[in-house]
Length: 193
Image (cartoon, rainbow, N blue to C red; front, side, top):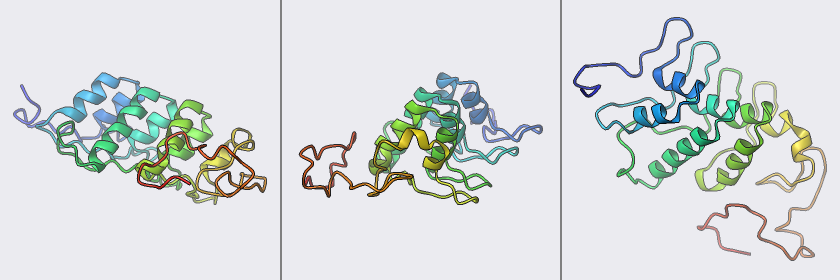
C-alpha cells in the first residue's frame, strides 16, 4: 500500500534524536531508501527537516559523511526543481542547499571540516549553477574554506580573487593567463571571456 493510503507521516521524528526516516536513511548511506522516500508521488517529504541534536538537514549529513552518491542525488533534485522539471520529482519542499544549522554551519562547512574532498569538489563545481553560497560565515565567523585551509591554499576560491590566506590574481582577470577556462562547471548563462 502507498504511504498516503496508510496515513503514515514520513516527516515524523524519533523521540531520541529527532530524526526523520529520510535523515536516518542518509546517515546509514542508503541511497535507495532516500530515492524511495523522495520519489513517492503520494507523500510530501520535507527535505530540509533538521534533527534535534545538531539541527542538521539530511543534505548536511550526506556532505559531512562523504556519501557522494547521496549528495549527487540531492543536487540532481535541486537542479530539477530549479529547472521546474517535475517529471522526475514529486511534490516536496524545495531543497535548501544553503541551509544553516544552529551554529551557522552549512553543508559546505561540514564537508570541509570532515575533509570530504570529493563532496567539496562537487559542491564547488555545482555552486554557480545551483547558487550554493560557499563564502557563508558561521556563528564564529568561519567559512567552509577556513575548516581545511591546506586544501585551498594552492587554488583560487570560486567567486573571489583571493586564496584563503594568500593574495592572488583571479585567472579571469590576469591577462597573462592564456587558460581562462578554469571553472570545472561553467554556468552556460554566463558569457565566455
